[in-house]
Image (cartoon, rainbow, N blue to C red; front, side, top):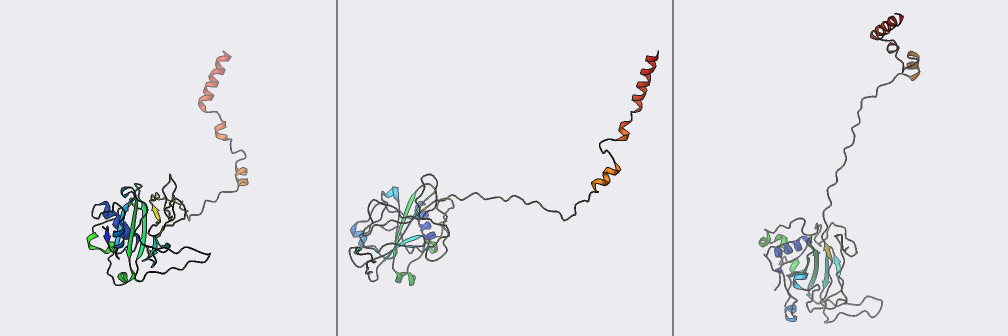
Length: 266
């Protein structure tokens, strides 16, 4: 029933699962789990689904979980020993009894560039992780051919083993027109109870175009030429706009004037 069996440790592990499902190498689940299937969940079970394809946004497994805690790119829950979550009776924090050797549940959701809302739920216990009994998808030889393409999923850069990422996240809702990267629980008309949860959703963010820096002018170390003082120029040329040579009439003009004068005398 599960999509994969292993340990989702980083966002890159989750993206490998999503891409393997997109290529048909793994199968997304198409429906909710039955009560019997929920009780059969074991450490290492990973479930992935498409929100519109499966017709479900929230995940139910019939188990009781602690309130969610943000752990890097994931929401994390711990299994409780009681069948019902204790209700808050005062302003103090209610006391939870964790189930001995209980499971830990992780939730991860993204929205792709094609506006495809994908969700992933993984289960594990600490003993299996410490003992190395669960394989990460990024280290699984069966998935070594899976290459997560750029431009399809949000740009998440895993930085640590807790599933952290380098992108800046903000507690805001996704704008309807401009895609953005957000970390906000999926809202619902009803408060999640039991196995229901709302997971953080990472929306696809287009990569900004590269910025080009205008070339800086190169300053020359050659000293600028020194001009003579203006007073000295005025003394050498009393009127710099009058050229004495150009003031005299040319030879051709004189010849024409002399010829005109002789005709007038006749």
